[in-house]
Length: 80
Image (cartoon, rainbow, N blue to C red; front, side):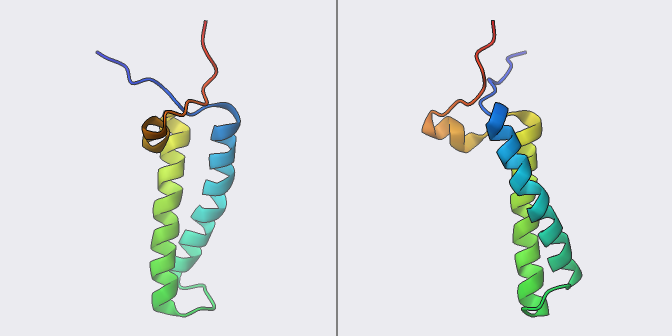
């Protein structure tokens, strides 16, 4: 089976994780309606924050980012 090359590593993974965790909290609070900007806007913003957090967490776990691939960026250390 052909393995897909990793392109997210090191500090890039840590930075994505550091952004994903607060986004996850904001998303959960927004969906629950715990905002000061209104229920509908809070829920919509919460869903958007959850989607962003999910995307970043996927990148962290899989060490793969489509945008990095499209831009030719590889932050993984060379193995071997």
